[in-house]
Amino acid sequence: MSSRLVLVLGDLFIPDRAPTQSASWWTNQPARETDNHGERRKSHSKLTQRSPKPQDIPTKFKKLLTPGKIGQILCLGNLTSKETYDYLRTIAPDLQITKGDYDVDAPNLALSKVVTHGTLRIGFTHGHTIVPPGDADSLLIAARQMDVDVLLWGGTHRFEAYELEGKFFVNPGSATGAVSTAWWGEGEEPVPSFCLMDVQGDVLVLYVYQLRTDANGVETVGVEKVSFRKNSAETTS
Image (tube, rainbow, N blue to C red; front, side, top):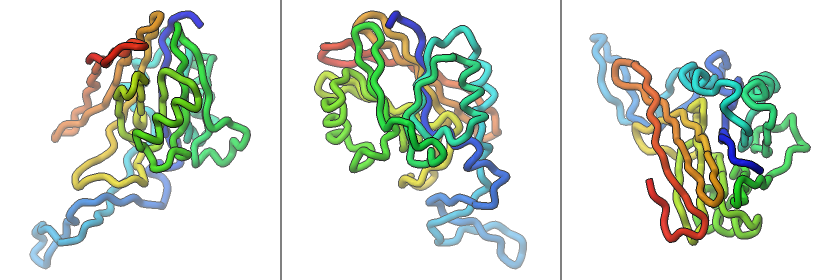
């Protein structure tokens, strides 16, 4: 397959974890309570209930994902709605999807797939079949079984990229910043993120887009670049 931009998305959960749903979600943070004088104070609770975050692809991301710039989309699962599927097809007609643990209405989706760009074999899977979840050794075994140079996986809603034993591993995170059932440290929240890959021969350049919100609620999109060369001793960033 000739070189072209490839969009990598994971765990969108639209609209399954939208704010209109009655189910609320929890995080490991000290709870805040109000005393009899109307003053705020900390409790000793480890679980705090928060208002659900809007579960749609952020507007600032959508402005970047314009038709004509992207040749292929690799969706790692938990798309969870036909409307989202139809939207992604407007970005690129070549939409490749693997089955996530919440894609119950799509039983025929494959658990993993392999595509070829340049000289690189790129495998992708949701990640719920990797045990323990996100374990580097287990991912390495999966990459060897699939005979791929690059393995994309999801499920954790957290961006990650690293090289191990000559193979490149990428988790794009969640483009919506959907809440995860995985353990998060105190004060941590999912950061909306997605990846674009540009492959030229045996070189893959990964562009990571993350939506950050400051204390005043102002959103900005940050971009980082990571490069991987097949058979190279190390990855540069």
